[in-house]
Amino acid sequence: MSVNGRVIPHTPLAVDFWQVRKCPHTRLFFLSHMHTDHTAGLTSTWSDRPIYCSPVSADLLKLKLQVKPQWIHPLELDEPYMFPLDDTGKERLTVTLMDANHCPGSVMFLFQGYFGSILYTGDFRYAPSMLREPCLRNNIDIDVLYLDNTNCDPARVLPTRCRATHKIKEIIRSHPNHDVVIGLYSLGKESLLVDLAIEFKSWVEVSVERMETLRLLKLPNVFTTDVGAGRFRVVGQSDICYANMQQWNRVSPTLAILPTSRPLGSYHPNVHVVPYSDHSSYRELEDFIYAIKPTSLIPIVGKCLPVSLSALLPRRRRSDVLVPESVKNYMLTQPSARSAQQRRKGPPPGPRSPPRGVVFESSLGSPSSANSSKGSRDSSTQSNGAPEEGEDVKGEDVDVVGDVEPEDDGIGRDMSRRFVPVKCKKRIHNLCGLNIVNMVAEERLMAEFLTLSQFSQSNFAPSTIMTNIVPSLRAVKVTRVTPATDRVPESSRDVTSPRHDPFNKVSEVPVTLSHGEVEEIEGSILKRLPFTQEDMTRGGLLDHGFAKQFSLMP
Picture 1 (cartoon, rainbow, N blue to C red):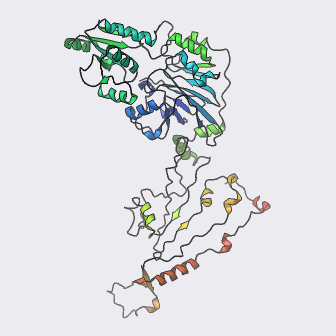
Picture 2: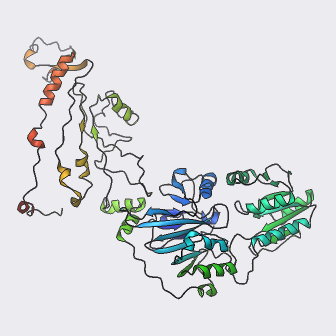
Picture 3: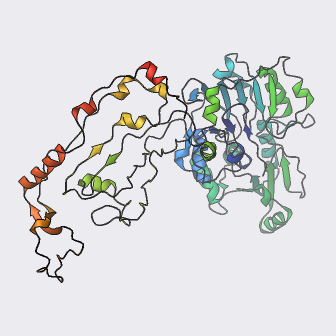
Protein backbone atom coordinates (compact mmCIF):
# COMPACT_ATOMS: atom_id res chain seq x y z
CA MET A 1 0.00 0.00 0.00
CA SER A 2 1.42 3.37 -1.05
CA VAL A 3 1.69 6.09 1.57
CA ASN A 4 0.46 9.44 0.24
CA GLY A 5 1.31 11.53 3.27
CA ARG A 6 4.00 13.99 4.24
CA VAL A 7 5.90 15.22 7.29
CA ILE A 8 6.24 18.99 6.96
CA PRO A 9 9.96 19.87 7.29
CA HIS A 10 11.06 22.28 10.04
CA THR A 11 7.73 21.84 11.84
CA PRO A 12 6.11 19.39 14.29
CA LEU A 13 3.34 18.72 11.70
CA ALA A 14 2.42 15.66 9.65
CA VAL A 15 -0.47 15.14 7.22
CA ASP A 16 -1.70 11.62 6.37
CA PHE A 17 1.55 10.20 7.73
CA TRP A 18 1.22 7.63 10.54
CA GLN A 19 4.62 5.96 10.76
CA VAL A 20 5.49 7.43 14.14
CA ARG A 21 8.93 5.83 14.35
CA LYS A 22 10.01 7.78 11.29
CA CYS A 23 8.87 11.11 12.73
CA PRO A 24 9.45 11.07 16.51
CA HIS A 25 9.50 14.87 16.63
CA THR A 26 5.96 15.24 15.23
CA ARG A 27 3.41 16.53 17.70
CA LEU A 28 0.37 17.38 15.53
CA PHE A 29 -1.14 14.84 13.13
CA PHE A 30 -3.70 15.84 10.50
CA LEU A 31 -5.93 13.59 8.37
CA SER A 32 -7.16 14.89 5.01
CA HIS A 33 -9.62 12.06 4.26
CA MET A 34 -10.32 8.40 4.91
CA HIS A 35 -9.01 6.66 1.76
CA THR A 36 -6.70 3.76 2.60
CA ASP A 37 -3.63 5.22 0.86
CA HIS A 38 -3.89 8.16 3.27
CA THR A 39 -4.50 6.11 6.43
CA ALA A 40 -1.77 3.48 5.98
CA GLY A 41 -0.32 2.78 9.43
CA LEU A 42 -3.30 4.23 11.33
CA THR A 43 -4.98 1.51 13.41
CA SER A 44 -7.18 1.09 16.46
CA THR A 45 -4.06 0.99 18.68
CA TRP A 46 -3.22 4.63 17.92
CA SER A 47 -2.59 6.53 21.16
CA ASP A 48 -0.82 9.44 22.85
CA ARG A 49 -1.03 11.70 19.77
CA PRO A 50 -4.06 13.77 18.79
CA ILE A 51 -5.53 13.53 15.27
CA TYR A 52 -7.14 16.60 13.70
CA CYS A 53 -9.60 16.21 10.83
CA SER A 54 -13.07 17.15 9.62
CA PRO A 55 -16.15 16.09 11.61
CA VAL A 56 -17.12 13.52 8.92
CA SER A 57 -13.65 11.96 8.93
CA ALA A 58 -13.76 11.88 12.73
CA ASP A 59 -16.94 9.78 12.63
CA LEU A 60 -15.45 7.50 9.97
CA LEU A 61 -12.30 7.02 12.05
CA LYS A 62 -14.38 5.69 14.90
CA LEU A 63 -16.51 3.50 12.63
CA LYS A 64 -13.91 2.09 10.23
CA LEU A 65 -10.66 1.99 12.18
CA GLN A 66 -12.03 1.99 15.76
CA VAL A 67 -9.60 4.72 16.79
CA LYS A 68 -10.27 5.73 20.38
CA PRO A 69 -12.39 8.91 20.52
CA GLN A 70 -10.05 10.56 23.02
CA TRP A 71 -7.41 10.99 20.29
CA ILE A 72 -9.78 12.33 17.60
CA HIS A 73 -10.34 16.10 17.46
CA PRO A 74 -12.75 17.28 14.71
CA LEU A 75 -12.31 20.80 13.35
CA GLU A 76 -15.04 22.74 11.59
CA LEU A 77 -14.43 23.89 8.01
CA ASP A 78 -13.62 27.51 7.13
CA GLU A 79 -12.83 28.33 10.76
CA PRO A 80 -9.25 29.25 11.76
CA TYR A 81 -7.90 27.29 14.72
CA MET A 82 -4.83 28.31 16.72
CA PHE A 83 -2.41 25.83 18.29
CA PRO A 84 0.67 26.48 20.47
CA LEU A 85 3.92 25.20 19.01
CA ASP A 86 5.94 25.38 22.23
CA ASP A 87 5.49 25.11 25.96
CA THR A 88 5.53 28.88 26.51
CA GLY A 89 2.77 29.84 24.05
CA LYS A 90 5.06 32.25 22.20
CA GLU A 91 4.99 30.42 18.87
CA ARG A 92 1.57 29.60 17.45
CA LEU A 93 0.12 27.85 14.43
CA THR A 94 -3.10 28.76 12.63
CA VAL A 95 -4.93 25.98 10.76
CA THR A 96 -7.90 26.42 8.44
CA LEU A 97 -9.77 23.51 6.85
CA MET A 98 -11.40 23.83 3.40
CA ASP A 99 -13.56 21.46 1.40
CA ALA A 100 -11.39 19.41 -0.99
CA ASN A 101 -14.28 18.37 -3.30
CA HIS A 102 -12.97 14.80 -3.34
CA CYS A 103 -14.93 12.40 -1.08
CA PRO A 104 -17.04 12.78 2.08
CA GLY A 105 -14.97 14.45 4.80
CA SER A 106 -12.02 15.35 2.55
CA VAL A 107 -10.36 18.69 3.33
CA MET A 108 -7.41 20.88 2.44
CA PHE A 109 -5.24 22.45 5.15
CA LEU A 110 -3.86 25.98 5.25
CA PHE A 111 -1.04 26.19 7.85
CA GLN A 112 0.29 29.61 8.91
CA GLY A 113 3.13 30.16 11.36
CA TYR A 114 6.83 30.95 11.71
CA PHE A 115 7.40 28.84 8.56
CA GLY A 116 5.16 31.05 6.42
CA SER A 117 2.00 29.79 4.71
CA ILE A 118 1.63 26.17 3.58
CA LEU A 119 -1.37 24.90 1.60
CA TYR A 120 -1.81 21.11 1.69
CA THR A 121 -4.46 19.98 -0.80
CA GLY A 122 -4.59 16.27 0.00
CA ASP A 123 -6.68 14.58 -2.72
CA PHE A 124 -8.86 17.26 -4.31
CA ARG A 125 -10.84 18.15 -7.43
CA TYR A 126 -10.30 21.79 -8.26
CA ALA A 127 -13.27 24.08 -8.74
CA PRO A 128 -13.13 27.88 -9.24
CA SER A 129 -15.33 28.31 -6.17
CA MET A 130 -12.34 27.27 -4.01
CA LEU A 131 -10.71 30.60 -4.73
CA ARG A 132 -13.61 32.30 -2.97
CA GLU A 133 -12.65 30.73 0.36
CA PRO A 134 -12.09 33.55 2.89
CA CYS A 135 -8.59 32.36 3.79
CA LEU A 136 -7.52 32.29 0.11
CA ARG A 137 -9.37 35.43 -0.87
CA ASN A 138 -7.28 37.66 1.41
CA ASN A 139 -4.28 37.74 -0.93
CA ILE A 140 -2.24 35.35 1.19
CA ASP A 141 1.16 34.47 -0.26
CA ILE A 142 1.45 30.67 -0.33
CA ASP A 143 5.08 29.73 0.34
CA VAL A 144 4.66 25.98 -0.22
CA LEU A 145 1.89 24.15 -2.09
CA TYR A 146 1.58 20.41 -1.47
CA LEU A 147 -0.30 19.35 -4.60
CA ASP A 148 -2.41 16.30 -5.47
CA ASN A 149 -0.71 15.22 -8.68
CA THR A 150 -2.64 11.98 -9.27
CA ASN A 151 -3.70 13.00 -12.80
CA CYS A 152 -0.67 15.15 -13.54
CA ASP A 153 -0.27 14.01 -17.15
CA PRO A 154 -0.74 16.53 -19.96
CA ALA A 155 -1.69 13.72 -22.34
CA ARG A 156 -4.71 12.65 -20.27
CA VAL A 157 -7.86 14.65 -20.76
CA LEU A 158 -10.57 14.20 -18.13
CA PRO A 159 -14.14 15.48 -18.38
CA THR A 160 -15.89 17.18 -15.52
CA ARG A 161 -17.86 14.95 -13.17
CA CYS A 162 -21.08 16.38 -14.55
CA ARG A 163 -20.17 15.26 -18.06
CA ALA A 164 -18.98 11.87 -16.83
CA THR A 165 -22.29 11.35 -15.00
CA HIS A 166 -24.18 12.24 -18.18
CA LYS A 167 -22.13 9.64 -20.08
CA ILE A 168 -23.00 6.92 -17.52
CA LYS A 169 -26.70 7.74 -17.81
CA GLU A 170 -26.52 7.38 -21.58
CA ILE A 171 -24.95 3.91 -21.26
CA ILE A 172 -27.66 2.78 -18.83
CA ARG A 173 -30.45 4.13 -21.05
CA SER A 174 -29.05 2.17 -23.99
CA HIS A 175 -29.45 -1.06 -21.97
CA PRO A 176 -32.99 -0.76 -20.53
CA ASN A 177 -33.31 -4.47 -19.69
CA HIS A 178 -29.96 -4.86 -17.93
CA ASP A 179 -29.14 -4.83 -14.26
CA VAL A 180 -26.35 -2.39 -13.47
CA VAL A 181 -23.33 -3.27 -11.35
CA ILE A 182 -21.12 -0.33 -10.31
CA GLY A 183 -17.56 -0.90 -9.09
CA LEU A 184 -16.45 1.54 -6.38
CA TYR A 185 -14.04 1.88 -3.50
CA SER A 186 -15.43 1.72 0.02
CA LEU A 187 -15.69 5.53 0.19
CA GLY A 188 -16.38 8.03 -2.56
CA LYS A 189 -18.75 8.74 -5.49
CA GLU A 190 -21.84 8.52 -3.25
CA SER A 191 -23.29 11.55 -5.06
CA LEU A 192 -23.15 9.59 -8.31
CA LEU A 193 -25.19 6.76 -6.79
CA VAL A 194 -27.82 9.17 -5.46
CA ASP A 195 -28.05 10.86 -8.86
CA LEU A 196 -28.58 7.52 -10.66
CA ALA A 197 -31.17 6.32 -8.14
CA ILE A 198 -33.21 9.51 -8.53
CA GLU A 199 -32.85 9.59 -12.32
CA PHE A 200 -33.96 5.99 -12.86
CA LYS A 201 -36.24 5.75 -9.81
CA SER A 202 -34.64 2.59 -8.46
CA TRP A 203 -33.09 1.38 -5.21
CA VAL A 204 -29.31 0.97 -4.97
CA GLU A 205 -28.33 -2.34 -3.39
CA VAL A 206 -25.24 -2.15 -1.13
CA SER A 207 -23.51 -4.38 1.40
CA VAL A 208 -24.23 -4.16 5.11
CA GLU A 209 -20.79 -2.63 5.76
CA ARG A 210 -21.28 0.08 3.15
CA MET A 211 -24.76 0.78 4.50
CA GLU A 212 -23.23 1.67 7.89
CA THR A 213 -21.07 4.27 6.17
CA LEU A 214 -23.98 5.66 4.16
CA ARG A 215 -26.12 6.04 7.27
CA LEU A 216 -23.30 7.90 8.99
CA LEU A 217 -23.08 10.28 5.99
CA LYS A 218 -26.84 10.96 6.26
CA LEU A 219 -27.46 10.64 2.53
CA PRO A 220 -30.93 10.43 0.90
CA ASN A 221 -32.78 7.19 1.54
CA VAL A 222 -32.12 5.47 -1.81
CA PHE A 223 -29.98 2.58 -0.50
CA THR A 224 -30.97 -0.90 0.63
CA THR A 225 -29.35 -4.16 1.67
CA ASP A 226 -32.18 -6.32 0.26
CA VAL A 227 -30.93 -8.55 -2.55
CA GLY A 228 -32.67 -7.83 -5.87
CA ALA A 229 -34.63 -4.87 -4.52
CA GLY A 230 -33.34 -2.46 -7.15
CA ARG A 231 -31.74 -2.27 -10.56
CA PHE A 232 -28.39 -0.96 -9.28
CA ARG A 233 -25.90 -2.91 -7.20
CA VAL A 234 -22.62 -1.60 -5.77
CA VAL A 235 -19.59 -3.92 -5.55
CA GLY A 236 -15.86 -3.44 -5.12
CA GLN A 237 -13.83 -2.51 -8.18
CA SER A 238 -11.88 -5.75 -7.97
CA ASP A 239 -15.15 -7.72 -8.06
CA ILE A 240 -15.78 -6.65 -11.65
CA CYS A 241 -13.86 -9.35 -13.50
CA TYR A 242 -14.50 -11.67 -16.45
CA ALA A 243 -15.54 -14.65 -14.29
CA ASN A 244 -18.09 -12.64 -12.33
CA MET A 245 -19.48 -11.05 -15.47
CA GLN A 246 -20.08 -14.51 -16.94
CA GLN A 247 -21.84 -15.64 -13.76
CA TRP A 248 -24.01 -12.50 -13.46
CA ASN A 249 -25.12 -12.72 -17.09
CA ARG A 250 -26.23 -16.31 -16.61
CA VAL A 251 -28.76 -15.11 -14.04
CA SER A 252 -29.89 -11.96 -15.87
CA PRO A 253 -28.42 -9.51 -18.40
CA THR A 254 -25.91 -7.40 -16.46
CA LEU A 255 -24.09 -4.20 -17.27
CA ALA A 256 -20.92 -3.20 -15.34
CA ILE A 257 -19.64 0.35 -14.99
CA LEU A 258 -16.26 1.38 -13.64
CA PRO A 259 -16.22 5.16 -12.91
CA THR A 260 -12.49 5.82 -12.57
CA SER A 261 -9.76 8.00 -14.03
CA ARG A 262 -7.33 5.10 -14.14
CA PRO A 263 -6.43 3.99 -17.68
CA LEU A 264 -8.21 0.63 -17.61
CA GLY A 265 -9.17 -1.45 -20.65
CA SER A 266 -12.47 -3.25 -21.07
CA TYR A 267 -12.17 -7.04 -21.20
CA HIS A 268 -15.89 -7.68 -21.66
CA PRO A 269 -18.42 -6.07 -24.03
CA ASN A 270 -20.70 -5.20 -21.11
CA VAL A 271 -17.96 -3.58 -18.98
CA HIS A 272 -17.74 0.18 -19.50
CA VAL A 273 -14.89 2.30 -18.07
CA VAL A 274 -16.01 5.91 -17.68
CA PRO A 275 -13.43 8.62 -16.78
CA TYR A 276 -15.29 9.83 -13.70
CA SER A 277 -12.62 11.24 -11.37
CA ASP A 278 -12.51 12.81 -7.92
CA HIS A 279 -8.98 14.10 -8.67
CA SER A 280 -8.10 17.27 -10.57
CA SER A 281 -7.24 16.99 -14.23
CA TYR A 282 -3.99 18.40 -15.56
CA ARG A 283 -5.73 21.46 -16.97
CA GLU A 284 -7.43 22.08 -13.63
CA LEU A 285 -4.07 21.83 -11.85
CA GLU A 286 -2.67 24.47 -14.19
CA ASP A 287 -5.56 26.81 -13.41
CA PHE A 288 -5.16 26.23 -9.68
CA ILE A 289 -1.41 26.87 -9.62
CA TYR A 290 -1.79 29.98 -11.77
CA ALA A 291 -4.41 31.35 -9.37
CA ILE A 292 -2.56 30.46 -6.13
CA LYS A 293 0.93 31.46 -7.35
CA PRO A 294 2.89 29.49 -4.71
CA THR A 295 6.59 30.09 -4.19
CA SER A 296 7.40 26.37 -4.27
CA LEU A 297 5.57 23.21 -5.29
CA ILE A 298 5.80 19.73 -3.73
CA PRO A 299 3.93 16.68 -5.11
CA ILE A 300 1.95 14.46 -2.75
CA VAL A 301 2.09 11.36 -4.99
CA GLY A 302 5.69 10.43 -5.76
CA LYS A 303 8.45 13.01 -6.15
CA CYS A 304 8.22 14.21 -9.75
CA LEU A 305 6.23 16.98 -11.43
CA PRO A 306 6.09 17.99 -15.09
CA VAL A 307 8.32 20.88 -16.03
CA SER A 308 5.32 22.65 -17.49
CA LEU A 309 3.77 22.99 -14.02
CA SER A 310 7.00 24.22 -12.44
CA ALA A 311 7.20 26.87 -15.14
CA LEU A 312 3.99 28.40 -13.77
CA LEU A 313 5.64 29.31 -10.46
CA PRO A 314 6.59 32.95 -9.91
CA ARG A 315 10.27 33.75 -9.99
CA ARG A 316 10.82 34.33 -6.30
CA ARG A 317 12.83 32.43 -3.75
CA ARG A 318 11.46 31.23 -0.45
CA SER A 319 13.34 32.53 2.53
CA ASP A 320 15.06 30.04 4.81
CA VAL A 321 12.97 28.71 7.68
CA LEU A 322 14.47 29.42 11.10
CA VAL A 323 13.01 27.11 13.73
CA PRO A 324 12.68 28.90 17.09
CA GLU A 325 14.48 27.30 20.01
CA SER A 326 11.23 26.92 21.92
CA VAL A 327 9.78 24.91 19.02
CA LYS A 328 12.87 22.70 18.91
CA ASN A 329 12.43 21.93 22.60
CA TYR A 330 8.74 21.33 22.01
CA MET A 331 9.52 18.75 19.32
CA LEU A 332 12.02 17.02 21.60
CA THR A 333 9.43 16.38 24.30
CA GLN A 334 7.90 13.47 22.41
CA PRO A 335 7.41 10.37 24.61
CA SER A 336 9.93 8.33 22.61
CA ALA A 337 12.47 11.16 22.51
CA ARG A 338 12.00 11.86 26.21
CA SER A 339 12.48 8.24 27.26
CA ALA A 340 15.63 7.93 25.16
CA GLN A 341 17.01 11.15 26.63
CA GLN A 342 16.24 10.03 30.15
CA ARG A 343 18.18 6.81 29.61
CA ARG A 344 21.19 8.81 28.48
CA LYS A 345 21.14 11.95 30.59
CA GLY A 346 18.36 11.59 33.10
CA PRO A 347 15.27 13.85 33.13
CA PRO A 348 15.26 16.41 30.29
CA PRO A 349 15.40 20.12 31.10
CA GLY A 350 12.36 22.33 30.90
CA PRO A 351 9.34 23.15 33.03
CA ARG A 352 7.35 20.29 34.46
CA SER A 353 4.28 20.25 36.65
CA PRO A 354 5.11 19.27 40.23
CA PRO A 355 2.77 17.06 42.25
CA ARG A 356 0.19 18.83 44.36
CA GLY A 357 1.51 17.23 47.54
CA VAL A 358 2.26 13.90 49.20
CA VAL A 359 0.31 12.58 52.18
CA PHE A 360 1.82 10.16 54.68
CA GLU A 361 -0.81 8.56 56.89
CA SER A 362 -0.77 6.19 59.77
CA SER A 363 -1.82 2.64 59.10
CA LEU A 364 -5.18 3.22 60.81
CA GLY A 365 -6.14 6.16 58.60
CA SER A 366 -9.55 7.59 58.09
CA PRO A 367 -12.14 5.76 55.99
CA SER A 368 -11.63 8.18 53.14
CA SER A 369 -7.93 7.40 52.97
CA ALA A 370 -8.62 3.71 53.07
CA ASN A 371 -11.01 3.98 50.16
CA SER A 372 -8.54 5.98 48.08
CA SER A 373 -5.92 3.25 48.35
CA LYS A 374 -8.30 0.36 47.90
CA GLY A 375 -7.14 -2.11 45.32
CA SER A 376 -3.51 -1.04 45.26
CA ARG A 377 -2.50 -2.76 48.52
CA ASP A 378 -4.83 -5.73 48.77
CA SER A 379 -2.23 -8.43 48.19
CA SER A 380 0.78 -6.72 49.75
CA THR A 381 -0.52 -5.45 53.11
CA GLN A 382 -1.33 -6.88 56.46
CA SER A 383 -4.67 -6.48 58.17
CA ASN A 384 -3.61 -3.08 59.50
CA GLY A 385 -2.83 -1.80 55.99
CA ALA A 386 0.99 -1.61 56.26
CA PRO A 387 3.32 -3.59 53.97
CA GLU A 388 4.88 -6.66 55.46
CA GLU A 389 8.52 -6.58 56.42
CA GLY A 390 10.87 -7.28 53.53
CA GLU A 391 8.07 -7.08 50.95
CA ASP A 392 8.03 -4.58 48.08
CA VAL A 393 4.98 -2.44 47.61
CA LYS A 394 3.34 -3.30 44.26
CA GLY A 395 0.54 -2.00 42.11
CA GLU A 396 0.31 1.77 42.10
CA ASP A 397 2.92 2.22 44.81
CA VAL A 398 6.09 3.90 43.58
CA ASP A 399 9.43 3.42 45.27
CA VAL A 400 11.32 6.18 43.47
CA VAL A 401 10.72 9.49 45.20
CA GLY A 402 10.21 12.43 42.87
CA ASP A 403 9.13 10.36 39.87
CA VAL A 404 6.86 12.54 37.76
CA GLU A 405 4.24 11.23 35.39
CA PRO A 406 5.08 12.11 31.76
CA GLU A 407 3.21 14.91 30.16
CA ASP A 408 0.37 14.19 27.83
CA ASP A 409 1.59 14.44 24.36
CA GLY A 410 -1.30 16.54 23.24
CA ILE A 411 -1.54 20.41 23.20
CA GLY A 412 -3.15 20.66 26.46
CA ARG A 413 -2.20 18.52 29.30
CA ASP A 414 -4.83 16.03 30.43
CA MET A 415 -5.68 17.30 33.87
CA SER A 416 -7.79 14.22 34.63
CA ARG A 417 -4.64 12.13 34.91
CA ARG A 418 -3.37 12.26 38.47
CA PHE A 419 0.16 11.94 39.73
CA VAL A 420 0.90 8.60 41.34
CA PRO A 421 1.30 9.11 45.07
CA VAL A 422 4.79 8.43 46.34
CA LYS A 423 4.78 5.83 49.07
CA CYS A 424 7.37 5.69 51.85
CA LYS A 425 9.45 2.51 51.95
CA LYS A 426 9.61 2.44 55.73
CA ARG A 427 6.95 0.55 57.60
CA ILE A 428 4.42 2.85 59.27
CA HIS A 429 3.82 1.59 62.79
CA ASN A 430 0.65 1.74 64.77
CA LEU A 431 0.91 4.80 67.04
CA CYS A 432 -1.85 4.08 69.49
CA GLY A 433 -4.49 4.41 66.79
CA LEU A 434 -3.80 8.14 66.31
CA ASN A 435 -4.71 9.62 62.96
CA ILE A 436 -1.63 11.81 62.52
CA VAL A 437 -1.25 13.30 59.02
CA ASN A 438 1.78 15.27 57.86
CA MET A 439 1.07 17.42 54.81
CA VAL A 440 4.21 18.19 52.86
CA ALA A 441 4.15 21.81 51.73
CA GLU A 442 3.66 22.27 47.99
CA GLU A 443 6.45 24.86 47.90
CA ARG A 444 8.93 22.26 49.14
CA LEU A 445 7.90 19.79 46.46
CA MET A 446 8.24 22.45 43.78
CA ALA A 447 11.85 22.99 44.77
CA GLU A 448 12.79 19.69 43.15
CA PHE A 449 11.39 20.72 39.76
CA LEU A 450 12.13 24.46 39.54
CA THR A 451 15.37 26.05 38.48
CA LEU A 452 17.13 28.54 40.76
CA SER A 453 15.94 31.51 38.69
CA GLN A 454 12.31 30.52 39.23
CA PHE A 455 12.44 30.84 43.05
CA SER A 456 11.12 33.88 44.85
CA GLN A 457 11.07 34.98 48.47
CA SER A 458 7.52 33.61 48.81
CA ASN A 459 8.83 30.12 48.19
CA PHE A 460 10.62 30.26 51.56
CA ALA A 461 7.67 31.40 53.66
CA PRO A 462 7.30 29.58 56.98
CA SER A 463 5.03 26.54 56.99
CA THR A 464 2.29 25.77 59.47
CA ILE A 465 2.40 22.47 61.32
CA MET A 466 -1.04 20.89 61.17
CA THR A 467 -1.84 18.62 64.08
CA ASN A 468 -4.85 16.61 65.07
CA ILE A 469 -5.69 17.67 68.61
CA VAL A 470 -9.07 15.98 68.71
CA PRO A 471 -8.96 12.58 70.45
CA SER A 472 -10.36 9.47 68.85
CA LEU A 473 -14.11 8.97 69.17
CA ARG A 474 -13.80 5.36 70.20
CA ALA A 475 -11.72 3.37 72.66
CA VAL A 476 -8.46 2.12 71.21
CA LYS A 477 -6.86 -1.20 72.05
CA VAL A 478 -3.11 -0.76 72.64
CA THR A 479 -0.29 -2.63 74.28
CA ARG A 480 0.61 -1.58 77.81
CA VAL A 481 4.27 -1.90 78.72
CA THR A 482 5.13 -3.52 82.05
CA PRO A 483 8.43 -2.17 83.47
CA ALA A 484 11.19 -4.65 84.19
CA THR A 485 11.08 -3.83 87.91
CA ASP A 486 7.51 -5.12 88.14
CA ARG A 487 8.33 -8.50 86.67
CA VAL A 488 8.06 -11.79 88.43
CA PRO A 489 11.39 -13.01 89.83
CA GLU A 490 13.39 -15.25 87.55
CA SER A 491 13.07 -18.24 89.81
CA SER A 492 9.29 -18.07 90.00
CA ARG A 493 8.64 -17.37 86.26
CA ASP A 494 6.48 -19.92 84.46
CA VAL A 495 8.42 -20.92 81.36
CA THR A 496 5.34 -22.31 79.69
CA SER A 497 3.35 -19.13 80.13
CA PRO A 498 2.58 -17.25 76.92
CA ARG A 499 3.81 -14.07 78.65
CA HIS A 500 7.28 -15.50 79.16
CA ASP A 501 10.03 -13.22 77.78
CA PRO A 502 13.20 -15.29 77.14
CA PHE A 503 15.16 -12.26 75.98
CA ASN A 504 14.63 -10.21 79.11
CA LYS A 505 12.43 -7.66 77.36
CA VAL A 506 9.34 -5.93 78.57
CA SER A 507 6.12 -7.86 78.90
CA GLU A 508 3.10 -6.82 76.83
CA VAL A 509 -0.46 -6.88 78.10
CA PRO A 510 -3.39 -5.88 75.82
CA VAL A 511 -5.61 -3.31 77.56
CA THR A 512 -8.31 -0.86 76.54
CA LEU A 513 -7.74 2.87 77.09
CA SER A 514 -10.48 5.35 77.86
CA HIS A 515 -11.03 8.63 76.05
CA GLY A 516 -9.14 10.58 78.69
CA GLU A 517 -6.12 8.28 78.51
CA VAL A 518 -6.01 8.53 74.74
CA GLU A 519 -6.18 12.34 74.94
CA GLU A 520 -3.34 12.36 77.48
CA ILE A 521 -1.17 10.16 75.22
CA GLU A 522 -1.87 12.35 72.21
CA GLY A 523 -0.94 15.47 74.13
CA SER A 524 2.35 13.98 75.30
CA ILE A 525 3.24 12.96 71.73
CA LEU A 526 2.49 16.40 70.37
CA LYS A 527 4.63 18.04 73.06
CA ARG A 528 7.59 15.84 72.10
CA LEU A 529 7.58 16.75 68.41
CA PRO A 530 11.12 17.89 67.42
CA PHE A 531 9.97 21.34 66.23
CA THR A 532 10.04 24.75 67.87
CA GLN A 533 8.77 28.13 66.84
CA GLU A 534 12.35 29.15 66.14
CA ASP A 535 12.65 26.43 63.52
CA MET A 536 9.83 28.00 61.47
CA THR A 537 10.95 31.66 61.57
CA ARG A 538 12.24 33.39 58.46
CA GLY A 539 16.03 33.21 58.33
CA GLY A 540 16.65 35.70 55.53
CA LEU A 541 19.17 35.43 52.75
CA LEU A 542 22.80 34.40 53.17
CA ASP A 543 25.54 36.97 53.05
CA HIS A 544 26.78 37.56 49.48
CA GLY A 545 30.41 37.05 50.45
CA PHE A 546 29.60 33.76 52.15
CA ALA A 547 27.61 32.47 49.14
CA LYS A 548 30.47 33.25 46.71
CA GLN A 549 32.66 30.70 48.47
CA PHE A 550 30.65 27.84 46.98
CA SER A 551 30.24 26.86 43.33
CA LEU A 552 26.73 26.48 41.98
CA MET A 553 27.81 23.66 39.68
CA PRO A 554 27.49 20.11 41.07
